[in-house]
Image (cartoon, rainbow, N blue to C red; front, side, top):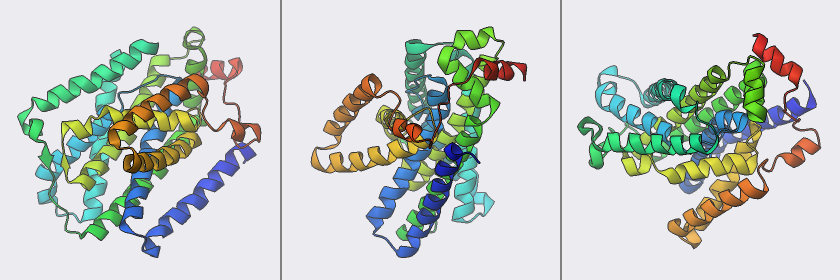
Length: 335
């Protein structure tokens, strides 16, 4: 295995093994909570980069898939799970599966028209998608409207619940990395990067750009929808304001861009840094001020560090220049 693949891959294996052993050390509840939210944001940031990083389509609408996954999980908890007779781990796994499938299905429907937009038009369209969904939920009685929905409490104490969510989010982050890694090193990934470099040229070489973008959006939405299901399960109650919160989108995009959105490892690095900053700023300057600072930080990263923090890793050979050649682009078109 080439160095640019072996080092990040082996690092991930070691980090995952260490993370899986953390609950055995009986850490403080706060530490466990901090870690599983870090895994959750890591999964969403890696999922986002499958579309936003690999193709360059800047989406601020991914929080819509978080909301779809969350509301799917809530409805399934209220209607399906009571008669299913499943234990908490199996119930959560089923909710995540349903959240991911429904989010991917919605992405397939809305993606066909939305992905025909480019640049700022796509970004604005993704924001409108969030707003339209939020209004629909607010005005749909069986989704709880403004009162939200309450999920049945699983038969677990608080420590058991947090450990279950910890392993679920760790597994989801691992799944997101595997999906992103597989796509990145496939012809689909080559096609996505060709779109990012110059979509018109890629289309001119007979690459089916809309199909590739739809694949990326659906994979990205599925991961985010699964994250929404875990989020709803952990909270126990969901509201439009929390499940369609654009501040979450800002943090996810910032995580991906800060770390390096062109490679699956970048969002992991960025999400860890952003989570630490979020906790620190939330305590010392307050949530509202922190939101302003994160918005400012996102603008600065986009202006001065658009390739993120993985550039040094590329320089020492841990990652490679992923710009596809013309021959590789033609190979994608031929498949």
